[in-house]
Each structure stands twice: as C-alpha cells, then as structure tokens.
Amino acid sequence: MERIGDALHDLALHDVAAAGPCGIATNVDRRPLVPTIADQTPMNACLMNPLQSDPVTELLAKLYLPQWQAAVWHLQPPWGLEVPDGVVSMYVVIRGGGWLVPCRSGSRSPETSPIRVVSGDHLITTDGSPHRLLREPNADTEPVAERLSDSIWPLVPAAHDATTLLYAQFELTDPLINPLAIGLPDLVHLNHRRDQDLKSCVPLIDLVHQTTMDAEPGWQLMVRKLAELVFIRTIATELRRNARCIDGDGQSRLLRAMTDTVIGPVLKQLIESPQQPWSVPAMAQQAKVSKSAFSDRFRNLLGRAPLQYLTELRMQKARQLLRETSVEISHVATLVGYESPSSFSSVFRRWNQCSPAEFRRGRD
Image 1 (cartoon, rainbow, N blue to C red):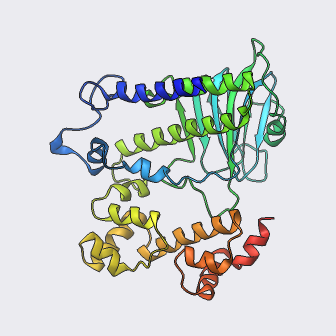
Image 2: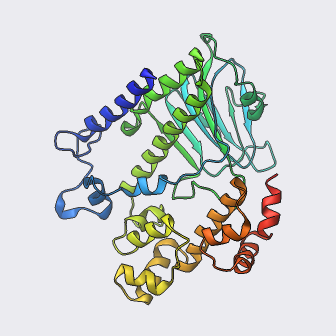
Image 3: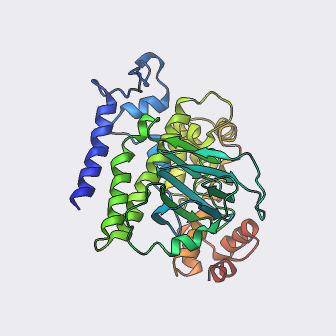
C-alpha cells in the first residue's frame, strides 16, 4: 500500500509542479496555458477557481466502464492481438512497440494504414471498433479475450526482446451507449514521454507493473483500479487538449456546451439529475433566458433539442439500472423520471426496439 501512496503523491506533486510559480498551468516551454484575465474563456475561468469543478471533471465523474478488465503482459515476438467490435481498448506501451491495425467490422481486412506504436504510447479505441495490435504488420494473432483469461498469474521477468504492455478494456454492452461519446476522437493516441500532462502517469504505470510482478494478496483488483486511473488521466489529457483548441469547428460539442455560460449550468444539472421533472420553460428559467433562446442555443451547441437530450440521458440511466440491478421495472421508471410505468415502457421501446423486460432478459 505504501507504493500506491507514493504513486498518488507523485501524481499530486506533478500537478503542483506543472502549475508553475503562481498556480498557472504551464506547458513544456513554460508559456502560460491560461490566458490573462482579460481574455479568459469560461473553461479557463473554471480551471482557475478551485471551488468550482472543471468541465472535464464533470464529464468524467460519472464515467461508467462496464466489465472493466486490466492486465500487464510481456509479449514475446512474433506476437499479435485481435480485438473484436464492441470493445474499447487501452494500450500503454511500457517497452517495445508494434503496429495498430484498424479493421472493418466483421473482417480482418485493414480499414486504414497501420499506425506505428512506440514506447510511452497511450492508445484508446474510444469507438470500440475492431482492430489488431501486432509486433509486425503481418503477424499472426490471438483473441485478446484468451490472453486476458490467462492473466491470472503473476508476471515473470521479461526477455530482452519482449514488448511490455498495460492493457485494459471495457465492453460496449449496448450499441446505443458509449460512455466515451463526449467529443473524443475515435482513437486517442498520446505519449507520456511527449505529452506533459501524461508524465504523472509514469509512477502509476510503474506501480501497475510491479504489482503484477509481486502478486501480493489483492493484486488483481489493484491492477484494475490503477489502470482505471491511467485511463481517466489519458482521457482527461485528451479532453483538456481539445478544450484548448476549440475553434468552432463542431468538435467536442459536449465539452463546449458544458463550458457555455448559459447552457452549461443547466446541462450539468440534467446530467446529474435527469429524473427531475424537467421542462424547457424550467430550464430556460434557470438559465435566465427566454424559452426560444434557450432551445436555439441548446440545439446549436449539442445538435438536438433539450427534451431529446434529456430522454437520451434517462434511457442511458434506465439501461444501466436494468442491466446492473434487480430493481423492479416500475421503480426504474420512477428513478429515471417517469411517473407512469406504461409511459416509461412506451418511451423505452421506442428508443431500444424492445420492452424493459425484454432488455433485462437479454442481459443474461
């Protein structure tokens, strides 16, 4: 447990050190990332106020990663991993390298050119598309599920030519729900040797590796939890990088809406409490604008009407409750904001092409 404390201490020290002499975040060149007061955006104003959650924290606080698994592997050449459709994968290359080959769904044929992967890389396939990770572009592969099933044993020291990976994944158990649909690219590709915000991951990655080697009681749970910290840090780094580059081109819609001075405060409440009896007039009243102005601004920022977005949030929460709990369907309806179970069932069927009961049976 001392190593976990040390790693988290290093993570905190990195954030303090990165803040610079006056608490202003700096990049590698020591140029301030936060503008002067005169030209602050809502995003930067949020980052400078320690009493207010920043938008990235708001987005990631409720991140739901179903069937999360993680492992560290020493892969001897020639090696290859194959990941099917519907699995979001994270790779952190501790040593060595290879090639990431995106594939067409249902096919091993490459969809795009192979992507070179090197030591220090963090890759996350946020859209859950099928792909292969290979030592060489034409290497044979094994299903990643088989490799994970063999990851119940401690690591042994690696040979000199082995590639060492931290791998983690979760499954998109419902094709209509992707918790990473928050303005991220289909493939996040960063490197903790190059990206300053990721350098704090290094002690965590070292700890994951050592924990797998030591295999002390509870090591598998520790690996999963530590890998989740690395995953969140990687996603947060990508979101922060996108936020600093927002230029009105339509990318990162949710993040831009979260930082909007009119829509943002209401949107945070919708995400936090979709079960409340929301209406467009009530939303507009909270935003202190007219109903039409609120609706137009909401649609321009998020690409859909306020009540449509609210229904999406409610359906996402309903699917999670139906899949992960045994709560009565009538109570699920109440928990997601419907007074009438029949109204809930009608909306659920329209969005999911099956009834709540059929959806729950399908999880088995």
